[in-house]
Length: 167
Image (cartoon, rainbow, N blue to C red):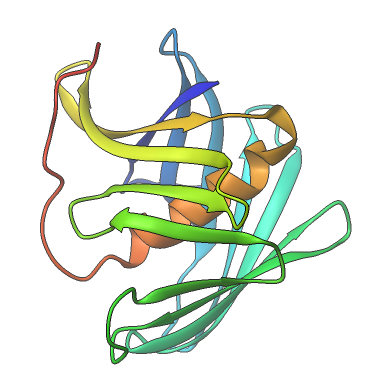
């Protein structure tokens, strides 16, 4: 399944809209809405009927944060973000997924520890605007993979997206 993640900056219903998720045909499917504050935040993944698909809580600072992704009434995964670590600044905990690739150019993959591909993330141009292309292999991984991509793309500390053509 192919999705496009486009960063937003317009307030929606008192919440900050972080990203809109578009389908392959260009129609909006989901959005990430949330509240920002220095040490905590809550981000909702909603469909356009207003139904919550998942939510993310964050505790920490720009240097060190922990994100918890909730779906189906329970925590699904933890993301640890530390810019002070050597190598990959993100760690996925609670599930058997790992990050590979270059998150700074926003070209990375999420794989199961067995090596099976879960999601491929890349920068691209969609409708003449920068966006992120997400190829999610299985529908059962959709909400969790979208949340992880939103966490990484909203906290990335250096560089602009490097656009590549969309096929």
